[in-house]
Image (cartoon, rainbow, N blue to C red):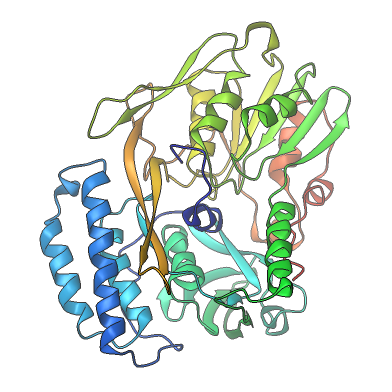
Length: 446
């Protein structure tokens, strides 16, 4: 969750990644893109490490660093970098120091790559396991026989479960993209299958040189807006279903969305897959469900901070029935919202246990050089959040009032029993197949 309204590279990371689990995947092994690096590149990596250390040591919320011998960790990392053989290894060494904290909102953001890698499939947590949640038509993943509902057992011989999804996405999409990966999956009928899937690599430019390059950049931005738009379904005049992709709305935009359902009898707020977002958005939205001010959480950090408060809206508040849907990809602000609704007994939370990624953080952009600058950064947790029951949600998540999970067969046939059940609670007849068709997953068109 972000402590100010500013876009960051880490926002892209959080949107792509889910649950926390850090120690099994080690990030310093070689990769297939590796090329022998020069002494200059090694020195650049060591300078990155020093800059990351400086911002981290100054700003991390816990001055004891969870009891870690932090100076020794950074010193050891610096020594390891002297023998690194690729930029991937350099970045992995920096990343590992921060990952060892086991903190969901503190991470190294490496220099952005000019190329974009797409593996053609996505995964999500269901219960304690990891399942294929989408396969892109026309991809190598589809051609090799990967299907939605397959249980992912390992990626490149690394075991995968709910706790490893965050790190797997971080490794393959941000830290060290690969031209392919080897999977072991279990089909819904119990059969295991080994697949080697090739990625689609779109080469880009590090330096924009023409109007055509800038046009492509603008088209990419428009594509992001399309994929992350808020979607709505009105099954009746009395009920609205809101598929909320992230907490990214301004106060005025929140007010506008509230107008869509303020006078209705029921709202189903679908926060499944929602990675969180801004504190301002959370506080503004939550306030509309109460006629009085409600404390969301206390911030615990190096200095005293004011608590997060949702200011009630009296006669403008929504007073109808509220159902909140969450899953293993719901994290940060979406978890805080769901838990406040539970603690205040304002509505019903249905679905899977949420991700347990609930801290407040800030992104610090960094760079080496001026003319041919290298841009990178670090996301640093500046506060833990303590709910009104005295507990933190970090590594715990929100346990729904009604635990309801899709089966592999549900996923394979695009059925959504969770949304269908929520609809039944507000008097709407919606079968799982129809519910699964309401908000289809959309892929990049470029």
